[in-house]
Length: 259
Length: 258
Image (cartoon, rainbow over all chains, first blue to last red; front, top):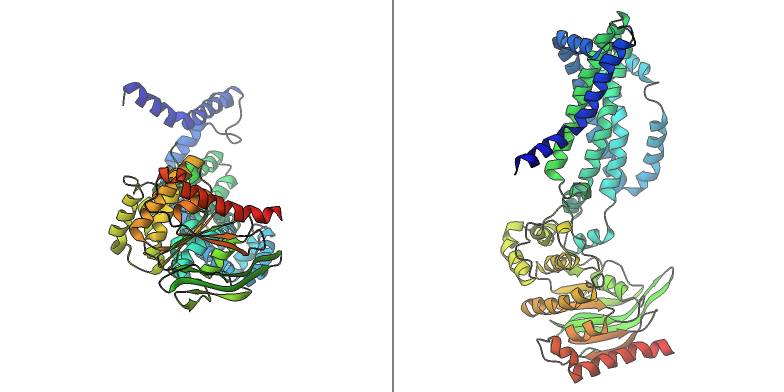
């Protein structure tokens, strides 16, 4: 590869960062020029300094939130796929389960979060339940599509080759559902995080939700923003892991094909 | 009714077959036989129930009346171990050429490794050498269909059902695929029931051409094709070939005029 080509590639990779950089520059100098008080909108440099100052605290609270989020997400994944399996293999259930779940999904879970604190206490359990409930629906809906929407010809072919339901499930349905499930995870992961954070807002003494709330009480706006940075780093990492899985296993997807 | 002449016991015996759907009768009083290792084509106008007939033979759907027997056993459900090729290749998009060919073995519950040599042999026979590790979207339509044919032949099925396998291909590719199929078939010698719209294709490939009437599909004529094999491009201009094609055409069009 020539040096100009590699430079070009580097520039292309850096492109998404350029917008962010521009925003930070405008923010830093614009806010200073407009004399916006720090407790309303702190400067990026102040946020960065506070972030570094509080890094140990950030890490502690983030790990608490990450744990409840990931447990909730894992449960949503397992339960969502399992529920989808029932619906796909027992079509009778579809007419029963789908409306109940859709109705349930239309309840704003955030509004009933206080109830979960009453039921499951101030500890991690209430956060896990909230994360689970928020992550469940996208996983379930996408799994139903992924496991169920198989071309009739493919199923006929599999049966005529002697395929049992189990083999068809493992080698056809599950493989077909994988990209649907990774897509669902990209949606469910931030949702589960919302569940955890809302739980921490309402009750408890740890987690990034708690950290933001206590920073707000002290009017420590830079710490609020610093915590938002932590959360953003965490979601980016999570989505990145899903993207890596896709890159490794789902090269065949239309969106990933090389032209 | 008419039977296809065969020296051995028939591979497929169809007797008094009726199939009706809510939309009407698709197949009516159909009876014929397919001899062992015979290549039989079904031709007829669109919607004459050719595809329905293939689905009946494979056991994917049940007849309203009448019976289908494959190797003396009445078909009462999906036959396991029948090779099937559809108009679309229906390859699994996440599997490479080799893995797609091996799919039928895996569905039967066999270890794929045991069939690797056979798969490679079929891939070579189909002219797909060098494309073993490609994904379907990296192959042309004709190549994808050849993969589908290899997949259907992997377990050396006693019966191969082909439902307009070249129907979605352009005319040049289609003609070449016909000769490819003849080459593969000459090497494997499976019993084939081949549905097509193309009279040329039917006469070129078959030992016997079964002509069906427009819907509801009835048996119109059974025409034996006694041209020597291998048939080549020159066969297409052979007077005997032309005469046979004309006979098939007459039988299809006679119905249209009625």
